[in-house]
Image 1 (cartoon, rainbow, N blue to C red):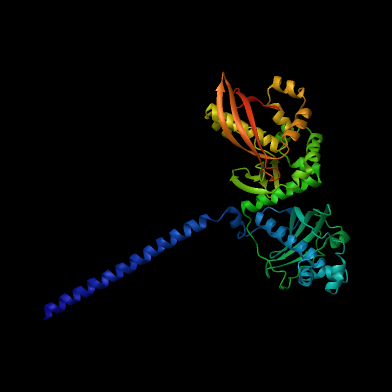
Image 2: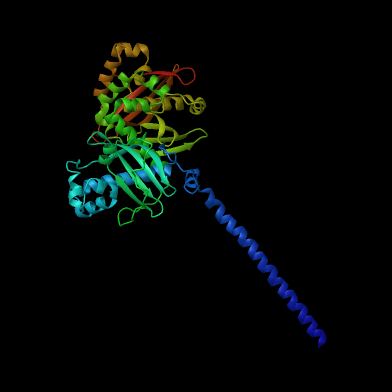
Length: 443
């Protein structure tokens, strides 16, 4: 009996030990499991997201915004401000009264007191004549920290329809997650700019949160930054040719346009079409010294933005004017037929981009002299009549005779305004590296 009891004790001890060991194993496995869950989650954090939570030094003088989350947050609040104005003035949406109340609720009390505005009706009088379908493009944002949890932003934007510049303050209260707007009238009275260093008149008081002035810091995606830059480019193209020229990469603009006058002439000829471009797709690449945002419009035209800091970038309006070593190396691996197809695609891009000089330059000299008197203007006149729309194409029969490739293509209007399909035969001779010359059938 005693022997049986001792065996039972031993079994109980072994069982207890096994339970303890199993419990320890579960703890260790749980730790590893949690680590596996956390690791990919942490990897999803970009440097930009981490910046939102890193303690930063107090900025007591105006500095251009460094972080995309700040830029995007402030831009979104400015756009909300403009939306409240236009919806408050015009009753097309049925929310006029709500928008007026919202607008009054986000205007800083300092401004309201300064200009003796006591109710919504008095505020709305300040915005009489505001364009019905107004939109704003934010160009520059500077930050000044009033305190550790209070930021002031100087915003310079462009009212697209009214075609005028506007400046304002956006005040962010991180303690209460609330914001307020100082309209341009306030800045003009005190002659505030991004150079003004004495900001003592801006009260260091918390903002009382209400139903309309709450906000949260938002991390900006690559897609959003691409849209921001594309819209800025589009606005400058349509409203400020000189500034748009400054946006262009220096090497690119010299090779593509040669001068600002040529660039302005290009805009003037194509302004109506350029006003209609929209992003259809995008991609982004991140390098050591810059970020690259590439987008395509509905006509397959390519725009390349190289960003060195938030809202500081250069632009290329196509992907063929400047050579790319990596793409050139891939081109050299292609067969003759594939190279011809690649070059046809490049030439159609030139036409769709209204880059008639580049499309003219790759034509065989004898061909362009015979048909267009070696004059790019006559070539442009012909193409605008023969191929007036923007086209996608389909490759058809291919042949090669004595070193001359013949590629037939079927061109189809991308704009949806012309159902006619156009057949073209492209005659092409490949040169050294990526060079080529071509001609086509002329009717």
